[in-house]
Length: 568
Image 1 (cartoon, rainbow, N blue to C red):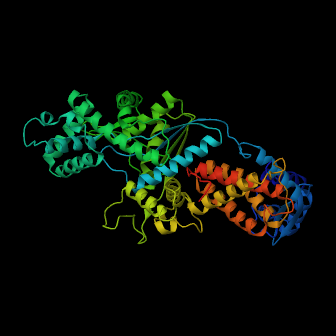
Image 2 (image 1 turned 90 degrees about the vertical axis):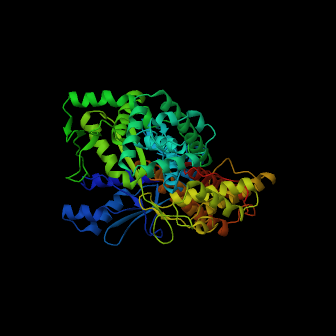
Image 3 (image 1 turned 120 degrees about the vertical axis):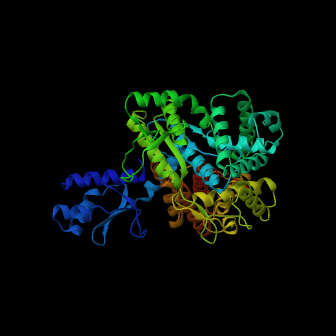
């Protein structure tokens, strides 16, 4: 039984004895001097019952007393505070240390698909992809940790009009001026190209499409590609492979793991039968020559437009492929939960796709979730850009973090781990919806709420444990004891880890894990100052505490996708 569930069980019994028909709730106490946990329900319940809240709180506190708690008290107008007995804290910490999962509460396993990444062919990864890769990977790890069967998909943007523009750019670069475009597109010409060179072709084609006649040609190329033209398909496959290789290299550097490397093109064969199905059942309708499906769902504006499935010229849109992809994931993969991790500008679109899927019956019994995130800003409060004012590429951000970390960490391998950790923790240490300011000097600092601070705390504990082993001192059968208030405080922070993990999964919020890691490390810093370990009269109990702290911080960093080093 976790410390939180112990208080909940005691409250449930106390509520029943006092005739209160409500589910209890406990949170961390806002005043640690009053207790470890706090219940704020009684004022509300007293009002409903027509009772004095403080007197009712006193009755609840009296009924909730047990051997688990050193004290159950009432503060203010009716806050019920629980202070756990030291023996209970030590026993729970000992059990947690012995548990490979650190007392994590497991969920009923669900086949889950998490969709994150979303990069486009022939476009360099940018600052927005940092958030998608980092948040998405952390969510993948969190969902796996609580027991879900998770498949991650990069969902590459490799279809649609952008491909026609890219092919147009290639034809223009090959000297096309008039006549058959495809005769100027040589698939072999792409063999040695870089993604930056492909990006230049796309920019050229996109700029050319300001001319309506050339835009019409790009649409023709798109249609021919989607109809399976062999030459265009071969060129497209080479361009896709170049982009995917570059994207995969960056994802590997960030330790973002994808089980599937599928894109919009993989749903192409699904589109026609899906549209036939929607039309046959009267769910899709014609509107000014286009095919649409009406959407409505909680949280969507009343005047939300229908989801456009097919344009009047017969072209499908990314909303069409998104709906077809969702349908595939349910039918072919057996997804019972689908999580999309994109920036908040996609919120209306994703909600419309979800609504259409529910209306069509494509998501029966499937939990559809959207984990949105805010933007990365510069110190001026605007979207982060490089010094010359251009949009920052993801690789530039990574290189900047690695350069800064190498100035502080001599070992090159450790510098890489620290630099990437600094970049990731800055992204994950604020709630994902709020966004954050990209301040590389603050990120790389070894003080304050930063990745290097946590990595240093972990390395320091490892150093203590290594020195103890060299001296022949070992934790006493991994039995945790409490010898000082600072030791008790750090153990309480450790015991809150299972709750943080559950909340992170419930809200799709890696910040819960980042904050838990920081709170444990901060409490350990005070413990380290107040409680000598190796020079203690009996160091074994404190070594067990150090071992638990190292495991909790290490696990939190692992869930955040952040590496650790044993020496810094």
